[in-house]
Length: 355
Image (cartoon, rainbow, N blue to C red; front, side, top):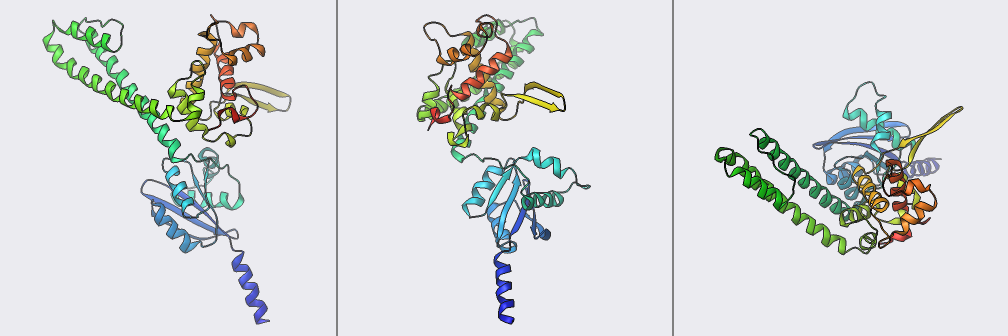
């Protein structure tokens, strides 16, 4: 009898499975561990994946799922934990928030408990975490966009300050803008002392933006998929690199038509009883990439001619009314439709952009 009891205890120990919820913040991470429907331990530790691995191995040696939400540290945590053999799962924060908001008191410990509940029940939506290489390209594109935005703000600030003194800067960008500003300031020494430092800062920012732009071009030329995308009218290095970094592996999508829905380019649907109608596009996913595809669709629909006719536009015109393909007036909805065609590439499988 004692041998059977020991064997049963060993079998039970081997079947033990712990489910862990992590509420990650910049300084500390709240940890909650559940087993057999009960919480067996919870605590906190500094937000360092190495320390988290030690805590997990100490208090949950048979961890089945380690769940945490998307956030600024999710990419680092996911790759660091999986590299150590921890079954880490990053879940959609918007879905988890609806359940976590049901708790009476909002604390990090309670959020970790809620995430552990989701891990144990399996009621979550896992998120595909991008690789560091893809995030490097996204960071490069984001940094360039940020600097370009600062440059635009500075130029607008210079125009606004000079208007107060009756100095209207004519339209122009780059060297034209610089020469126009300096010409107007020749007769106003006092104002020049204020505006010229802003103009020099504007010059430096444009130089940094050009440097990042060259880095982006080099990265785009090194990728076969990016070069292939750049053959589409209206698709340049920024759009192509952003698209490839977002998709990564075409096998992540069952069909290429799923990419449009993933980027929020497909219409939403509401159906309840006898009510059934479609609404605006969902606008879920990458806002920046969705905007780039919209711009590319606008170029294909409005700026292609007989010399640079696009097969994507031909396919779009075959499935839509002639008015939708008009050159002079193209509605926003038709441009979004064209953007979906751009994401699908006119094929049923995503192999057209195989890396």
